[in-house]
Image (cartoon, rainbow, N blue to C red):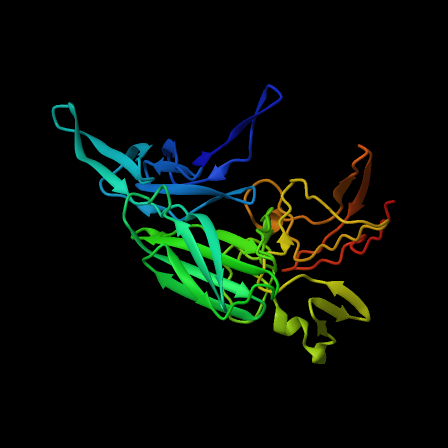
Length: 345
């Protein structure tokens, strides 16, 4: 069927998950150092990587290999993938021989930098990091570091493991740093560090950047994992009824606290628990930019937002459960129970 399947153990019962389409005649599998899965497609003469993004396994574009019929894969110490291939042919004497014998190294993008730390100075901040443990089998070419504080953003590309951002002031709100590594095979995932106005680290907790000033690149997938964000400029456009007061959006006479721009203030929900903190007797849940993905390939027919079950767990071990529908930000359907008020006390 030209597919790969994950088989998981749940309380002693092994269950096959939804099949993932790959190339023709998958022959071998190996695990990358980053947790991704690599598959050798013997008949299509390709190797493919399967990555997990926010709980969804997705195949990457196939990589053509030297020789034919890749048969075996293994992961090198640097994170590169090694592949062995051969072709068996039948000669006139009906004796099988092998041709196109080849062993090929496939360079992989490096891991993200690690151990990000920031030092504060007058009107500037110095960001430092450590090189990735896994370089993908080739030398690091450069690092790309970015910073966002309010409407101020800046990007620096360097071969060093630190850089200085000027124009920043501690106490001016949260500051968000990101760093990626680039080698000959490509760019790593993003390492991030967010600090509050006092310089304390803010835990990431499945968060993504959801609101940006125009022109700011999204390095962590945005609010939907596909790189999309809301425009800070458009949200405050008075001609369409918007108004921004600090981090508050006023629309239709209702004020919404939308968080800070260019900061990871949106929470990705993929079945994990999300901690709600604070005091009071009313909990307000604001869901925006929703894309609820059912298990299986990501297709328009496999996206459902209607009648999702939400559970609120209290510290006293009691729960409250309700059903609510969410419109996909990309293709809103206007379901029943989209606007649902539930007061838990």
